[in-house]
Amino acid sequence: MMRKIFRTIGLALTALCGAALLTAASKPAPAPAKVNWNTVVTRTPADSHLLGNPDAPVKLVEYISYTCPHCAHFEGEADAQLRIGMIAPGKGSIEVRSFVRDPVDLTVALLAHCGPPSKFFGNHSTFLRHQTTWMAPLATLTDAQKARWSNTDFAARTRAIASDLGLYSLMQARGFDRTATDRCLADKALAERLAQHTKEATEKDFVNGTPSFVLNGLPLSGTYSWATLKPQVEARLR
Image (cartoon, rainbow, N blue to C red; front, side, top):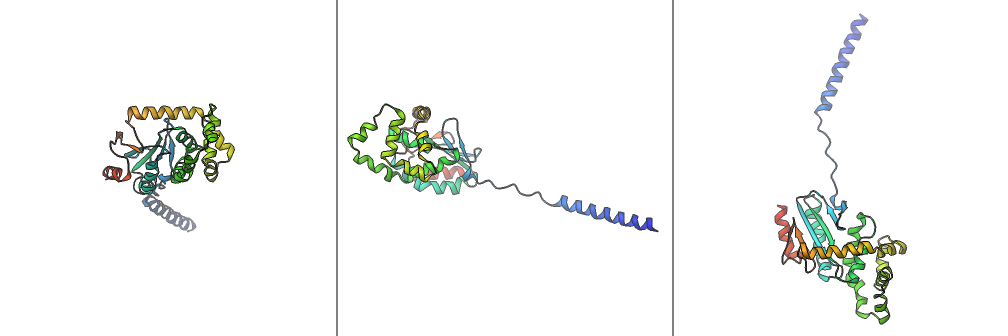
């Protein structure tokens, strides 16, 4: 009698376990975690920085100069719209390349590159959005300042430019102390590479002004503003 009872209980437990397994098997697998592409930054071998999905079908390259007012205007108009409509859904990526035009532009570019890749787009935006403030002293440079800016010592020259334009304060607000900032300003090897990349941009992508754009490998002639770039980007996002 007892054996019969135990056998009945065993059969019942087996049935319950089987039902549980069937239930578990019928449940859909959890959805993969959604990637926040606006936080994914990749530094390229060409010393540029790419924001978003590296495998996105729409690839926008921006050539910018930090002393270019049109670049600052473009940043203010386009940044949020590109992040929301193109970067966030993983449909597109933005690659920012420095186009160095003068010693001031080079100095700021070195500071934009300061720190790990995750810092770049914050640095980049800070310098463009505060451009009118830090460029204001250019109109009233003294002879002594001009002499410091002509120093043959590379690091001394970039430090003088950074000091006279108030760039140290902007870097401090970004979390860089003076030692870290000076280390970035002394990166002559990067400066030389940025100058070479600028030369290559004029030869390969026909860049002769900023901002300039390359969309899916095609240089965009006559496109220097968000108003002219926007419809071209949107056409490829459809």
